[in-house]
Amino acid sequence: MRWEVKDHITEAEYNRGLTGVTLDGLATKITNSLSTGAFLVAIALQFGASNLVIGLLAAIPMLTNIIQIPAVLLVEKLQARRALSVYFVFLSRAPLLLIALIPFLSHDDWRVAVLLGALLANGAFRAVSQCAWSSWMRDFVPREKRGAFYAKRMSIAAIAGMGLSLAAGYYLDWVEVGFPQYVLYSYSFLFLIAFLSGMANVWFVTMIPEPRMHSNGGNVFRMMLEPFKNINFRRLMMFLMVWNFAINLAAPFFTVYMLKNIDLEMSTVVSLTVLSQLVNIAVLRIWGRFMDRFTNKSVLRVCGPLFVVSIFFWIFTLNPDRHAFTVPLLVILHIAMGIATAGTVLGTSNIAIRLAPRNAAASYLATSSVANSLSAGIAPILGGCFADFFADRKLSLILKWSSPDTEKVFHALKLNHWDFFFALAFLIGLVSIWLLGKVEEEGEVGGRVVMHEFLYEIVRSVRTVSTVGGVLNGTLFPIGLIKRKLRNGNNGA
Image (cartoon, rainbow, N blue to C red; front, top):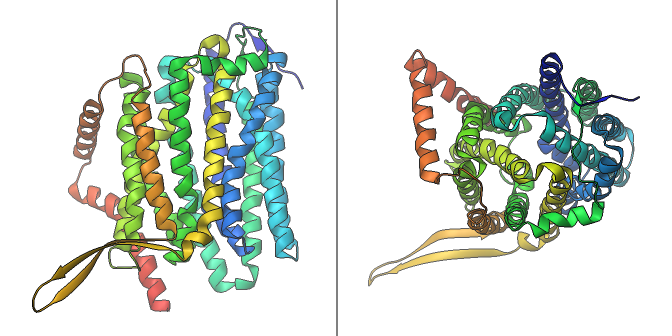
């Protein structure tokens, strides 16, 4: 199959293409919602996966991005980004069908091996498609509209993914309670839907026209070294590498922590994730407009510290055991991370696109992606390797009060197991924020300006709600849902 590369795209073709990009985001979100994150970790735990395997599950999608290096050669040589995207999106979705069949295998060791192999194939093919896609979208979506457009695209996708994830979480709990012998096969159903959504994803990609690619025609490997010669882009890559290492040292284990350490039900874990996504949707367009208005770096200087601080406060959800504030704190943290994630995901992707030279976008973006993926892939592997080591280690900060009559000891802080990763991720995250300050982006403003404007937008949005009751109901619904689930679970115990 061949598709024409166009020197001129009509308005009708352009609008149809934007619809295709939006639908692609929708299908991709559905696929990822059911085949990654909590559901992927949960099925691995069902297979008896170790902490190292959990780390590998998070690392494989990152480490396979190194394949973008030869992928750049393909993109530069063929200059047919739509064709490459279609073919390799199809190949990346096919392994999901294999994962859906894994529960029919009889041995856990085989199940884990096939799961890792399928994810490896998925990540490898996805890396090639992503390389072509990034360069393609760099030329197709106008620079002045990127922030608002991608914010809208992510909002639509998030709504679909949120509802589907919540339904899937309750479906798994329903099967586990009513039909425990079929729990593994319930995951097969989820991955089958993810596969079908992935096939729809392929069709939507074919709807988007491809503008002619701008290339300098140089040696690809020499082109891959060019970003390192660009001082500002090199600083950007350093920030992104440290940032991704910090986030992926702790974040991949949030689900394990909630399922095994806090002992939450799958539906409750998914409900917390949905709460975060609700907040994400609410602020996504605000951050998108701010990026077009104030630059990506300006938004990152607000969202980055918020996310890093949120990671640190995971330490207090169990300190040392589950307490009355565990669930309320999880709710607050998921709200904060929802606000921060909306800005950091948009900002870290768009700032690389904006700072990459037009005639070398493919090589700049691929080099940045490979560097970021290596750091993000190494982090969860290290976390998985040392998880068992830290399981039997504790670090306490003790305050002791002595008087002639009494002596009291207070545990001000107590770190154990995953807490070490949360604390370390927090410290490394602070370093990444410092590195962000060295990156230059034209038009940037201070973080205080962005925060002031953000709070103004939030207040204005609240005032547009017709009744106070509507605000309270919309705010308290996810919290009430989680509390009811926990109360029902405790009554059942």
